[in-house]
Image (cartoon, rainbow, N blue to C red):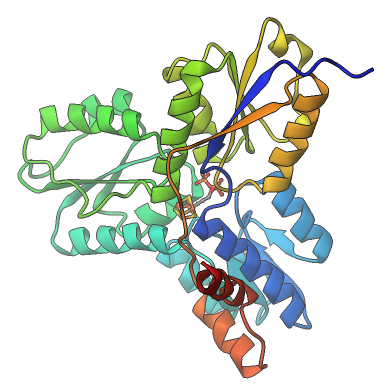
Length: 336
Ligand code: 0CM
Ligand code: SF4
């Protein structure tokens, strides 16, 4: 006889793939199908080990920098974006490029360019060393200062306190960012805000959902890779929201028995770069451990979908291929 199924799972919705990740991953898959040559990808296309391993098995070659890509070859830029310097380097090497930068990251790039043109000092709230921050800062290196968090605020120096704006990485904790911004505003009362939220809809929605389940959970499990900013933030937000324990795991293999001592309710969510199959594997394992009563907790509905990168669409159209995601979404719209 199996374990008695008395434990509950609160399953956060929305969770998992966002529109930018779906677009980037599908772009690599379609490129692998379409091109009869090696498809190089600069950096992990999205920050998820499972996704990157599967694409590597299908033939994608991941590189750290474009100088590792043979002259004239095809390279895809990751969802996190690139600086103009990388774009230029690719051009120098005559690389053919597909830019899978999420449109919501590109939006922040454009804001940086605009405020730099107007000669603002730009305080970019984000994690130094993260690919997205490197790309955004690279749009206007002379104007951008990176502010990692509240602890950095005291050391910020600006040329003119009347002309300062803050922008941010798309995948930060909303609450911690607001804490940083409040401190910045105490120092610079004229600090301007981004024209629209830089922290993207997917990051915000997943944090709202995990905040809802965290206080009612004895343990929150977040599926996501260690280098995935939005996934790590979900774990931190769960703890802030009152979960007694929260852990980030790449897969079920990382679960530890001691986490479940005295636990009757487990909260589950996943980062924006995490395929649903990993969550389903976790739910199966939780059922095996006696947590078989799964209750979805929905705080928002998402239906955003981005079209594939333009360069790829042009190629596919010329070959008579279609973006099957759009077909499926049109069919869903007709059926509803
Ligand atoms: O930015 P982050 O580290 O959260 O990246 P990710 O690949 O895990 O998630 C999606 C994105 C972007 C940009
Ligand atoms: Fe785009 Fe947000 Fe997804 Fe990043 S997390 S890829 S910014 S939608």
